[in-house]
Image 1 (cartoon, helix red, strand yellow):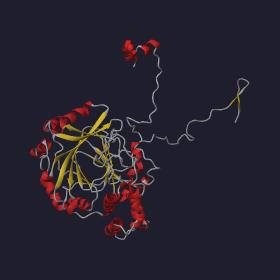
Image 2 (cartoon, rainbow, N blue to C red):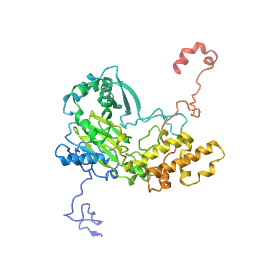
Image 3 (tube, one colour):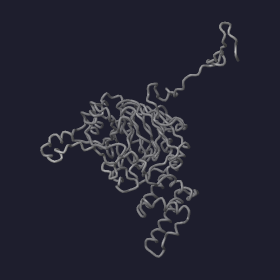
Image 4 (tube, rainbow, N blue to C red):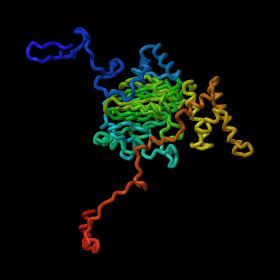
Length: 465
């Protein structure tokens, strides 16, 4: 609408209203991530290194088994049913001791005792363990340049480098105790001499849960905001947090082939998820949005039970994040139903890959699922007889372990966007001696005398080069 101006000859257009339409309209606040102080989050914590839609599974339950008989029974039931749970006030590890600082740990370790260390670029600060035994040249799974470098250091060297290096971050996962708490190195002997581990409580837990014993104990040290990407282990674990806090995201193994996409058994990154939880490529992993995980903030003095085959995505929230991980041998425990498919998948990949090769493994499994394997089998040869036995083994393993399931559909799930070469892991790698590199041409600025008598101008020409 045009309004006449009382002064001057022109007309002015009234300024449009820039405020809210109503004077009493609520003011919009800037969106901030919600902080759950009850679960252990703090305002200054690093942001989660995963997408928000991945945590719709809620929070991992906390139980104090020493408060009452009922709570102790509930904690034992959770572990027997292979459900993750946080045990509070167990005093499994004496985390209040002042000896858990970097300087004291360095003194307890011998200079001759080397520990495995992973080194990562500080801009990424995430650590993948690459199995060099599976990283074969010429294979479709070959990783030309692993995402993190593996090194061997003494404990004192690790502590010095973790504080002095600015462009690189370090992560250490070193075994300190073996079977039945037998000391492996100086740190292990110090743990047992100072009685920092409640061995009696652990032995009673092993007897109750039908674990034969503790297979080994590892000491984990991680820098602030360091990331251990989603991976699983084939055995049960107890993570006892000693210093600092960790944000851990857990995924049920029943979702392994629904959207987590684990690496194949023969891949150097076996047991890791192929999905980058920070930057999800929906074209490569279209079903990842279907899976939901449960998260927790593991604080000093707490113990997290991680069942076998559960994916754990761990992020450090404090400096010098230290924990002890107790690894168990689950040979005497009943398998949980949720992990059977992932376990059977590893068995099938191993047997089919050993007989027909890694490159043909996916093709064979898909043909078995489509019942078309007979077209490529010559029944008149020994090799054809072995292939028939292999196809029968694949069907029998699924039917025996997963009764009532559609074995054809399960085989297709196992092969869905998996068991394929992984060239995308090498997309940023550049061969040092590429024959098809574009040569660099330099103009020849030599004079006739320099070309005719190069020995007289040797120093000049070398300086120019």
